[in-house]
Image 1 (tube, rainbow, N blue to C red):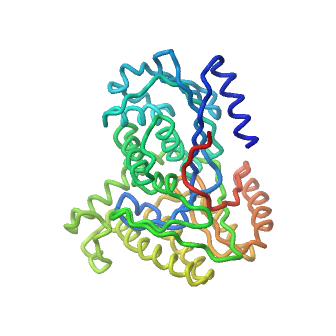
Image 2: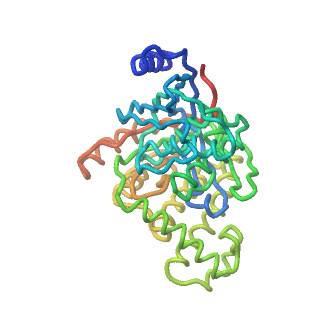
Image 3: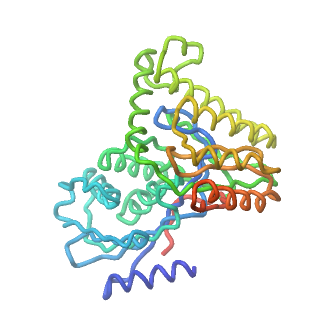
Length: 374
């Protein structure tokens, strides 16, 4: 409540004389396993976490949709009369404009409002700050309350307006996350189930604090290479491809398809191990996932590899891998709870020695999906 009170105070400072605001939140996420499988309509297993984006909003007489980002100390505005004609600006504000545009495109009336964004999800950290923002803004602007519909519209804004060809995983877990559990999601059928994690383990995210420039272009290229592999194999998407047909591929399409096919299998193995309490198998599966992302999908980098290798040298750490799009961002670590201090100490000591800056360490708590706070 103290944080919400501070946000409301800040809202009144930025928009003096405004009507009483309301507030919504959406969480970030750590994807335990199932990386780059979502846009291939495969399996993923994310977990909503306690880091969250809060969007506070109040009606305005300005005729404008106005927004201020606390983290970026930046503002943007658009005439609500022209919401349907918005175009990308190429900056952070596109994710707000995209939500308004998507709602308008579907027949909703966007009223003049003042918005304040306050987020604890690190930007560019691989913990889905963009989906948390999109889902929270979608709620603030009157979007659907049903979690699935909310996720679908938020994703549509990201793909249709912002132009990033993402799958539905991030928006889904931001809308539908559950305290104490991860979500095993089939991105093709949208069937899902909650998977409770074994007692005595911790999930720790380590933010490398870097984002390499090739990340955006390489992400698109991976999407295209997966589509090419599916085309050669004559299937709708790589979720439908069998490992026995990999010999029909060559070059990059072979590598990308091999990762996607084996990663889908690893998601099922990880979930089954979690449900029977086999934490050693869970850890092994994470390590295999990182190797596949590094070697076949080629989306890791020196910083992520170092964080993984350092973590695996700590007694009590069961597994580690990069999480998120890659080329920077975060790693996810599975460990016994008593090993958390040792892991934090190792990463905070060795990573700066190697790269010159400190990582951010987040002990992740499985949290509920989006909700209204006020």
